[in-house]
Length: 275
Image 1 (cartoon, rainbow, N blue to C red):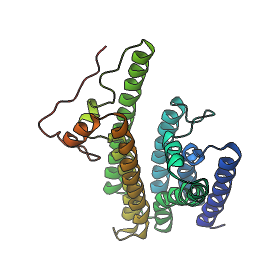
Image 2: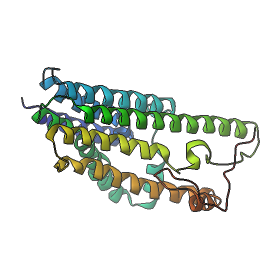
Image 3: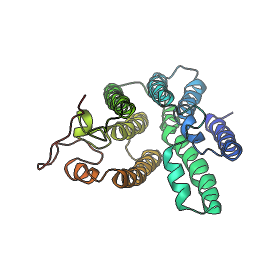
Image 4: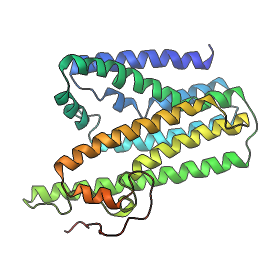
């Protein structure tokens, strides 16, 4: 069977499974739980269809596997796979919508839209499958960039993990954490450096397809574009929650770049955690 149609069957199965599980369990983070797994499967479908003989596809599959392994580990250690590990934003959103409206939102946005997006971001592998050209220097550059962004996301997530462990320890000891949110390390230069690196990796995957086809004019740009749009919307929603919890977050927003890392604006210093 054509590998693209294999991916469509996987997409249909994953959509059905995540929707049914959301109805049965009352939790709506099932797409989050497969987010780091399904794109890896899609890329390997194309690599396998080429008989694992296409160096570019093998490279893409290997890099995306590294992405998936890192993200799966980070999600697991935060309790994302445990019962009750639902994203807190869905609970907030349920409180703002009627039950019927949220049911429609769950089916069409959380389940269908996000699962389609996970296929779209992997489809540069289809472009590479259709254009089995030899590896070249641009592929090497793409691989280096991918690993650079992968490292950046790993560092950012570790800094966030360390901060929240410290914050939880302060609360457990009966002390008020200061600061109440992370604003040092990579978070001094971007409010969401992990978001930036995540999106950048999938833009690099898109570039692999462009290198294979010999042109930047590829319709698969739809994947990273929609992913970027999703992250923008998610960032706006997440930060609205942060501002409601922490009034001082507004000052952090004023001095710090939202996504793309950049030097902080003058007129305010990051607050370092005090032990």
